[in-house]
Picture 1 (cartoon, rainbow, N blue to C red):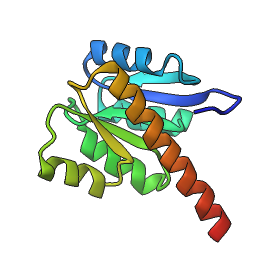
Picture 2: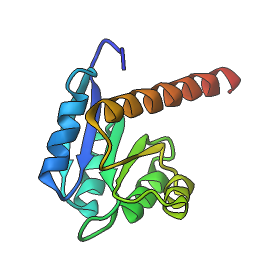
Picture 3: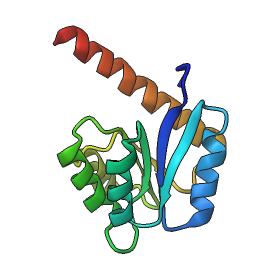
Length: 137
């Protein structure tokens, strides 16, 4: 995340303290939180409105869960970069998250330095693939 302008981020979690933790993680990453939501329905509306470059979203939320929201976002915006937050990391759960098109996932019990590193690495890989895709197109 070394772009000159700030990267636009949408934070989605029904737990305010998790959204606050993500803001701390993003603080020195040249990122700007453009919107926050506490359920998937609101997140989808905000995604359409703000078109964030990064969405960090919880799996388990009220109204519309994160997996349903991810599926809806990816159907409209196939190149969307979405990192899912999860309390569980069973192989089945992670596989489902990735099969639905998530760019990555972060366990909620991960330390702040690991969260930062995970976001940076996943974003760097995404940007690398995006640039290679343009070269091959």
